[in-house]
Image (cartoon, rainbow, N blue to C red):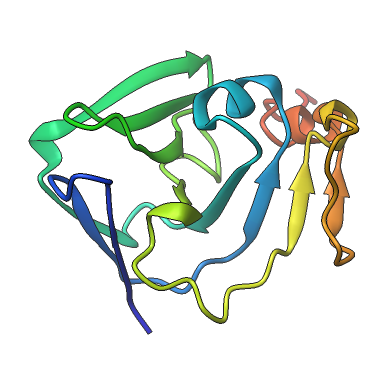
Length: 144
């Protein structure tokens, strides 16, 4: 089942053609500054997103392994995309708040749980990962 979404002003819209692999909450300080709170993202493969209005998408390289995208017209946070080589390269984490309809989407995991502020918590139990565990996913394979 595909899902649609857009930025606040509608200049950028998308169709998510793949079922999200995960719906995660990121508590890292960068995501909190970028989104204004906890970032909720839908993990989608590189070929799982068709964007219309891409000329209005601005990207910011926020780390050695990822970029963040926003609408240059209204500033809406659109997605986080993995740029590091490896099995996750090109994977999108589309902002849940940009969906036209988010019914039926459950939170499956929380990352950077060790950076989560004390002021909020989610009611359901999810898989959790610390920042160190997340970074280990992007580490190059050990040489033999």
